[in-house]
Image 1 (spheres, rainbow, N blue to C red):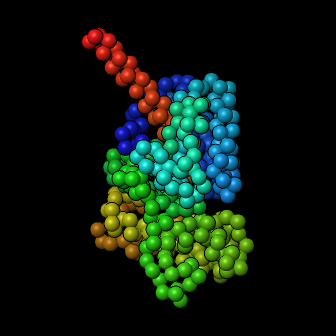
Image 2 (image 1 turned 135 degrees about the vertical axis):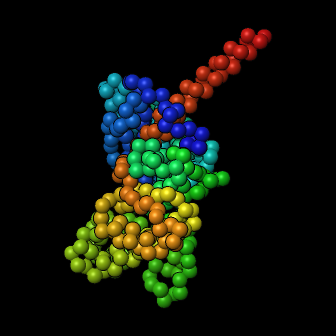
Image 3 (image 1 turned 30 degrees about the vertical axis):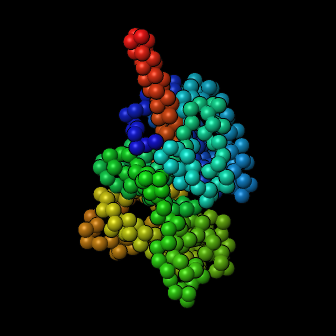
Length: 337
């Protein structure tokens, strides 16, 4: 949806608001965003637990959207739209076409279920976060840049003139899950196919550390263990950061942006992991990319839910615009008759 709309299309009317829903593999963040100020008025976070199935996830989302609708009323706001963003491929028609993270959502009536509350649109989470950072965060001032999200998974989005690029089928985001190389069998426990997300994402850091005998629930636990001198954690963090740096260098070598803005729960955090990844990215970048700006996002882990809220505001504005156009067309036709 962002290809045809931008922030200027939002009707920033006092009293209006939208609900943003950022569904992730680990948690789902929801927020109420004010139309006039484009700031979050309220937020809530719940576990996604996608292993329960897509219907259960959608039921949870529906309940939380209803609660936020009540919060909006208490704050004197009218909900004009809902944006739902997902870690899946979403085509140009706003249809979910993959089910890698949320089982069955590619055939589930997500938008129609939530449209009972307000006009609802669905987008890819990385494009929504990129849109938010481009208009309100670290992407401002760049005519052409990349947004890279590093969290439970890894994906990217190219942004031109403030608008995320979706590609022909909505799949211009798959840096994390694509096979980047084939390693010899003796290369290690991560397998013969080298997949960035399997080495450098937050979930990968945890998995790889646990496989080496460590105890961790979150990427932050692995980073803390590395800081304490745990050799297994140090190896996992170092190799993950190097792989992430190679992934960033691959993007800048191929796409030649002015900047790379890094977001997501792990990517936006000011940690030694990001510092090491940045050093490796510089090491592997070609000469023409040596001046590319590498920076963490300004909106932090809220970029996704803010972007979802902006999509909701645009959904409301788009429907209002359509009604006006249809009304104008009908009036013109009547006059012609």
